[in-house]
Length: 64
Image (cartoon, rainbow, N blue to C red; front, top):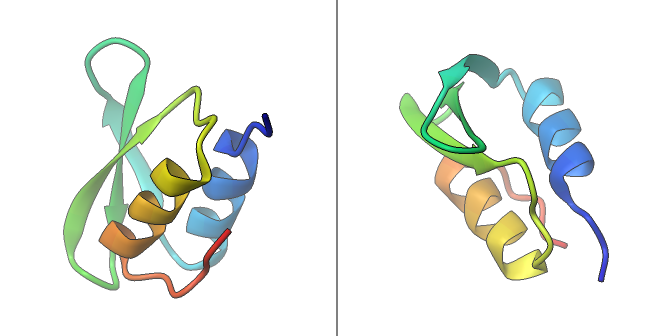
């Protein structure tokens, strides 16, 4: 299984999203200026489906 967390965070940063705060457990809260919403990002993303869901919630058209 591939680990997607580093790639997801890089793509979020490249598209103007930024880290807001730590969430519960091992989650981070990011803000997307595209959708003007908060996005929860897990620190251990092992599924491409989860990575795609984060991209969709942040309004970025990237798919894994």
